[in-house]
Length: 274
Image 1 (cartoon, one colour):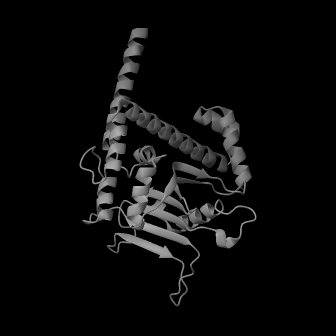
Image 2 (cartoon, rainbow, N blue to C red; image 1 turned 90 degrees about the horizontal axis):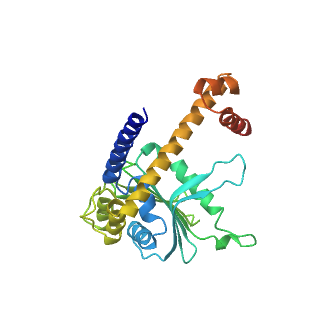
Image 3 (tube, rainbow, N blue to C red; image 1 turned 120 degrees about the vertical axis):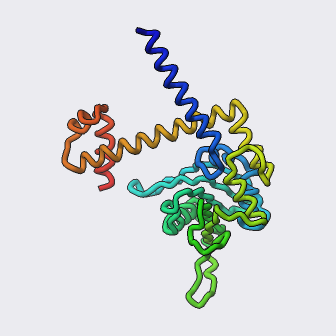
């Protein structure tokens, strides 16, 4: 009996390993998992990304992936920045990798920009000390469908005068393949291999997490972690829907065959946000 169970488990694990391996092999820097690994704490790679997009020499001193900013309001919406960076002069950057156009809504950019601003001014500092902030969306396709490689937005008066408030929102066309620095960057961002990159710092990062045993292992861990998080989110959505339809916590726990404490935790969250 036990030997058969071991064979089934081993076979299942082997299939999971194979599927995870395929996910890693096919991943590009437009995928959350690989992007997170390559850019987290990687100042040279982050500097390259921003230098090319902004067409200037940045002085990046901080680079963090999946950086969370909590809303000051207990009922407010928190945000998770794909790549957060800070320059020596205090300017801040958020670079979002968006494969879904739905997730690249301009109002999301506005909200992210406002949340970043709340972290940029200390008590007692005057408003003119607030440094510039940049929210950059790299979208898989041309979000605005106007054939441009990049779209840069600053607040302006209806007569064309710039407000000069230091807030910048940028959309990068991830499908752009021009023979310039931005086109080459987008080629690299969409390269699923470990060779043929235009920028060595990106190739080195990708190669480490795809070919190095330790790096590849950390990719597998992160993919599994994301899968578990998504499963929990889906479970929470189902619980919320059932509770909203009038079922009590015990009924929901029974129906889904889960611990009643899990249901009560979701129920409490619904009450706080109602």
